[in-house]
Length: 153
Image 1 (cartoon, rainbow, N blue to C red):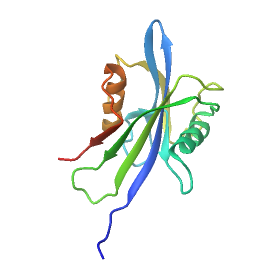
Image 2: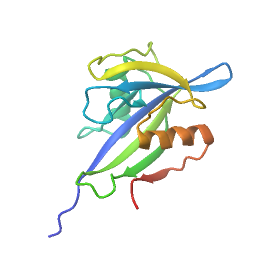
Image 3: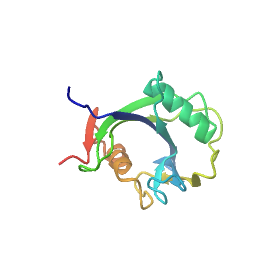
């Protein structure tokens, strides 16, 4: 019998708003997570739990991390990724945007989030988590497809 690798699913939510005729995205500055700390990332993201759809996970993560509910999610892409042969599980990420929600986004987990800020898609902060930057650039430039990959040779 062949051992199969485990695919870890995650859901990401990019909250978007229009300000001064420009599209802005809400990003969080990661801290104390052990992964990409001191990088800007989706304001809400996390693993899809057993028995949960990616849509359900996106709603749950937005409520847990930002205290917002009632999101009208728009699926924008999926990304299969790896870290170039490292001994990690492969990932499948589901990316959503939302322009409608209830509540004012706020930092709910200050131990994991050092800052929360809106940035124009045309002027993103640095550094951004690399695979998320690919999606943000695709949102900005209109280059997203339903399926993407990252980290493969």
